[in-house]
Image 1 (cartoon, helix red, strand yellow):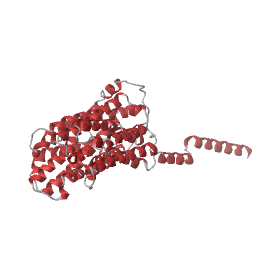
Image 2 (cartoon, one colour):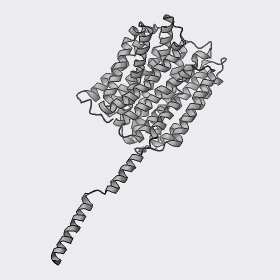
Image 3 (cartoon, one colour):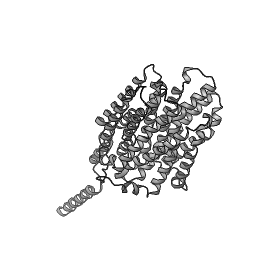
Image 4 (cartoon, one colour):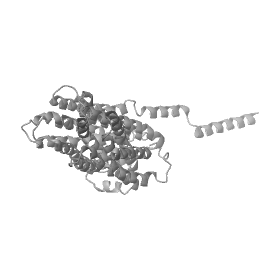
Length: 436
């Protein structure tokens, strides 16, 4: 019996030892799952989105007040210069940020917060440019505002990428949706009876609030990896473009950008001409309100595209959106001849499609870049993309009837679609990247 008891005891010990090695501890597993669940608080994405909305409200503040200034030296051509000055400032800012890898070397939330405060200050100085002054002062202030927007839009995407490893396409859909709504917001404020100075100060106050929210409420994301670059190192940028998938996503994004900001900038001009030709005097159909709705509905398009990317992948959603908006560019002369209701509905649909691909292109860029260079990758691609927008915005200032203006934007979507199809979709199942 003693021998039998000893054998049984030995077998029990061996079984216990085996269980200790092979079977996971249910308590530890539960704790690990809880840790993963609480590693991203529920308020993180709403806080980033709200801050992005607030910061990008600075973007078109100058455009919204242009008709209210009443300066003798501001004509229709000034719209192109005014918008391009913001774009040029943004390009300069993104180039500096990318060259110095600022979004990767420093805490991106702090960079975002500081740039929101600085951009708000530059915007708040616009009333200093009195009617007795030249257009130059207004352009300089808009340029510096654009410079600091470089620390808001692409850096905001970097913050989101640090928090979302899966579902990034959906997260960036919300983020770029906030950009669309924020960009359109000054046109809504213009509908409120108030001075243009009040509108400027309101957008500045909103931007300050957004900077404080992200600066104090959003910590570093769990997927943040600090860059190894200690200073100026252009080779980081060059290395990124040796990746064909990265280069393809970037080129497709640039084709999209050829259309996007020119469409947003010239929509009020096209609509003013359309309404004048159709003798529409209703306050509802004011160009500024239509512009707010057309740009703002893009936020819904981004969110819908983000959820579709979970099922179909970012590349497929970007391709579909760019194909739709490119087709709308081609059909725009026919839309101009349509009744008011059809024209309005078509522009709302166009407004949803024209920006819905933007977060998906950013997702493809971020996923194609090394973790330690994501911030630099997003920033340099934005830099070149906004350089492209200056060309398209100025091109539409040519003496061409408003009915045909948007035909000049068709080449951008064509180039973007070709690049996206060649390196991301051809010969692949569109469901392949369904978790992006």
